[in-house]
Image (cartoon, rainbow, N blue to C red):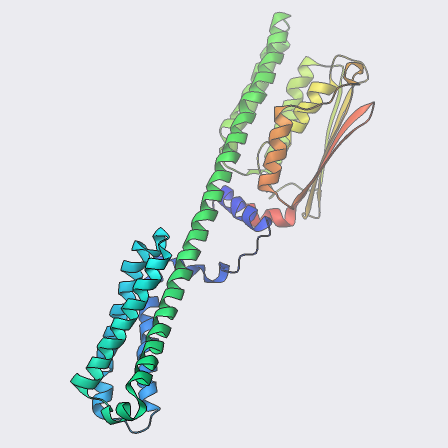
Length: 371
């Protein structure tokens, strides 16, 4: 099964809607295709030389026989430039030296080719003398430059694609680190709030303290084991919210807490701890020992294509002039931006009497990530 976090991060990269024209040819940068790409390139060059000779009409046998020698000469030139001049000068930003030495290499290649033609194989010597030596040299230089240009162009493209892959991988690694950091912050934040509640009960010597510890144990078990993965069943997250509300209900019985679920959550996975910071915020600011306080939580699955989450809580009089918030809300907003870019809509509003959060997640996109 594909790692959900890596799948989600890949989707982050897609969610940014960055135009990546090299996605379809990224295989070029893979080392396992490297030798085959070289073979195909030189096969094309070799056949081009053969076809060029055949296109001239009746060609002496010696012309075909000598093609491998010129082929090896061109290959030596190309690999000298690619594996000596490029790393030594071009990659070290010594561009002028690279250009100068490349022209020297091309010139030497043409001179050796001319010497082989005129003094070793003596191919079409009469034609060369009639056409003019200078014209022949220019033509050979152009052919060598074309071969070199094609090779260096392919090499630069391959290096560029590899660099882009490295850059994207670094971005994904940074995102993964940030997500893990944000997720790690949620556990101690929640534990601090819960232990603080139990401490108050213990100070008052209330029997509910023992039941609170049991409820907290169930919640921590879910965090330690079920949430070790980067995605959890929606059904489990809902059960987690129910247990959390039960734990807080033991502390504040005067607040009316309601959690309703519409639709079928089976088979749907989401990132853990997406809902709990909003519920924590509602519990923190909606249950300040005032009669008539309420917290209404609603989770709806619409046609398995959309997930709606809302929490509305009353605001006590002591909070009328204060803004609700905290590290939990900051973290969950950041996680939503990282995990579900362009796939969620978060709306937080408040009036003089209540505070409301509405979150919508596109499940059609979500299934591609965690499916």
